[in-house]
Image (cartoon, rainbow, N blue to C red; front, top):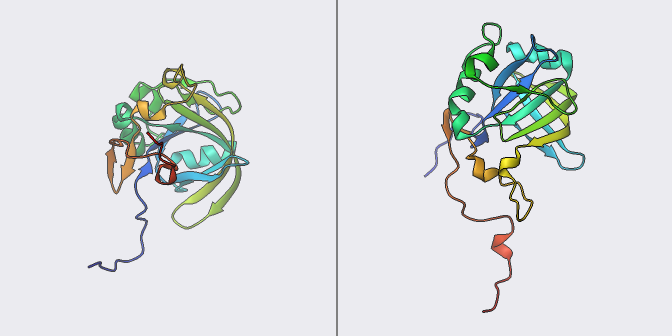
Length: 190
């Protein structure tokens, strides 16, 4: 039997992301975001949703760019810490021992410890209520070559032990149970 609950955001798991912003070293900041996702393949676009009272909100709005840095189990502590501390009070890169790196197309820094950094330019901001959605074009993706399979050339993101957010908790992904299209693949005769 199922119960009816009041409307809420119960779409989980979500990626636990570190969003870096700022156009100068003095302005660099990191915010942890789970309200994020892909919205278009061609052209590549994504979004993040941020509360207007967050320190990063004004930085992103002023510069109209940010970097989405995927997180790993190894980055779990820093991911949580950057979500509960304000950049008004702390230099999050310094406090968490994270390295700001140079992005290819935006002034916002990448986080060198992240396996994948997605450089974004804001296309539109939509006020939704508690959060504003920053819809962005993806301009460049920086991938850590230690996750490149030398035989296939494929980026093996699962090897980085990605971190996800699930209803107040952080989790690893667990074991792989299938791949896209496996349910309809033709069986090999053998």
